[in-house]
Image (cartoon, rainbow, N blue to C red; front, side, top):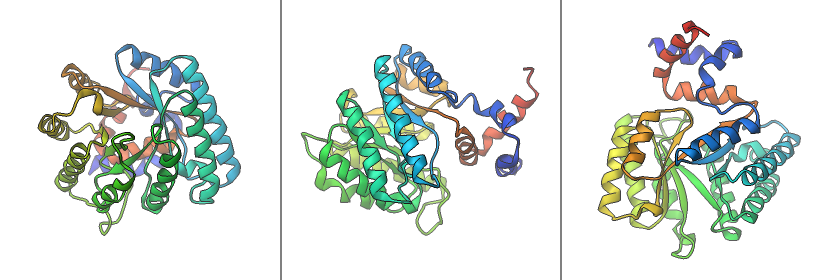
Length: 303
């Protein structure tokens, strides 16, 4: 209860205090911070996906600015030979304001990444965005089948149906590429599973669907139960090491991450950066209120 209380009150805490906790989970506010963090991870044999923080913008001028920032990100990352790709949140390009404007901006970003033979993943956001983001992905995949992917959330009741529904664009030549995660947004029970075990069961069911249909999965979890379950499914389907990867968040469970890599699995870390780090931090805490203990410790640690 104490942890949940802290998570609820966090948005009202001064940002300088929240930063004490957040800096372990965010590369920094500037692009140079993300490049530095990505290089350090690459040196450990870890791939990255770079994400500019910020979503649910209020006007299309912000969408234009966000597009230009991503163009900068891609150029600088490629110039520095970063072993990684890019993640975008469509709402930060105006998806809920004008979906056609958002499409044009994201298409430019994907085209830029494709010019370097690289890849952009369309993040899945909350339920008002789901149909729009699937539609957006379909259009991108039609033009850039090797350069774009999507995210699915196992806590959404519709996910199994959505996976089935996209099989018409899946092929041996251009296999679909998905990140599979539990899901973080607060959704009503009618459309999202709430029980922890139920979410986990559907995660493994969704992963099994991907593996048996030769879809490339990014297995995005910090849950030991799900990681062990994933090992069993990978073995069951004889999936080659180059046909999947595990994914984790920057700064989260480094020991678990290391153990996955020591077993010979590939790892990609999600590297978020940007001036809009505060909203990201509060969502992380709401997802895992136990992290409140670390905040309290950080507040009283010297320095």
